[in-house]
Image (cartoon, rainbow, N blue to C red):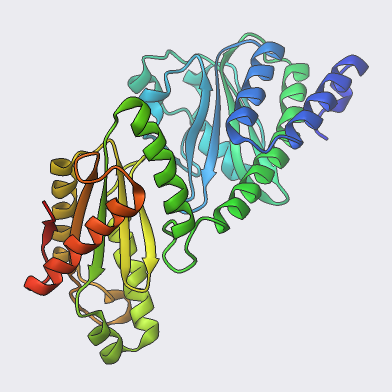
Amino acid sequence: MYGEQHLSRRELRSCMDLGKALTSELDSNKLFATILGKLSDMIPADIWSLLLLDRDTNRLRFKLSVDLKMEAVKDISIKIGQGIAGQVALSQKPMVVEDVKTSKYFDDQIDRLSGTITQSVMCVPLVFGTRTVGVIEAINPYKTTKKALSLLMFVADYAAIAVENTRQYQYIQSLAIKDNLTGLFNTRYLYQTLGELFNSGKKSGAPFALIFMDLDNFKKVVDTHGHLNGSQAIQEVAGTIRDSLMEPAFGVSYGGDEFVVVLPGYDKRMAIAKAEEIRTLMNKTIYLSIKGISINVSASFGVAAYPEDATNITRLLSIADKAMFNIKDKGKNAVGTMF
């Protein structure tokens, strides 16, 4: 590991004990808090930040920070090669900048958004195998000695393993609750979460709502364009649903061309508006264009809300389902309720 020659036996032992703790932790929130908490104790700095690489976008995102308001940076993503953090992720080499005014890589975007004044930076990559998984960055570290960098790199080696472990664990966990085709949640997760929402609602009175949706005339799409293209269309509709939702709301693949949307905190009026939003977005979207085919896909929507429409799971699902079938009977491509 990097720079062991700069560390005392006691420091090596402390790092190894921390490494064992990190690599045995599978709860990502606890893991990230432990990493930054220990580093801020070992190497004081104005701000410590952990940025992880989003594999879908290949951009760094802030995962956790000590003494930096996450609200200011939660929506920021950094391109590989952009700024000091992006350059470290690209080169997979640590970087110590004593004065950012002299660095050609320094980007003051974060300072402008957060009100931070960066004078110096110490940044190291998290590398698993040959792949960068993130970076750890200290803003205005109190010491930028070789020993401080060695400590940081030693911890970073273990942190990279720990981050990858938690990613793999989360992926395995997701297989049990996610639908393979759409990437939406499955019915197991639906019923589990509805039980939790009902229990919470009984105690707090918090509302929630369901949207049942069924694609209109989808058999015609399959008959015309084949099963593979039908599956692709369902995937793309699932993407439309995801694009319309913000957590804690979520979509469920209910089977075939049926979907359920769960809306914690929504009353019936809000749920009807959300269903209309999804319906409108679907109507504006051209599906299967990546296959060289251009089709429109619509759906029929049924809405039910707790506690307004029902106070048990079976009844709520049944009301939303019946409301959706009423729309089917009346001409499709609309939103309806039973009451």
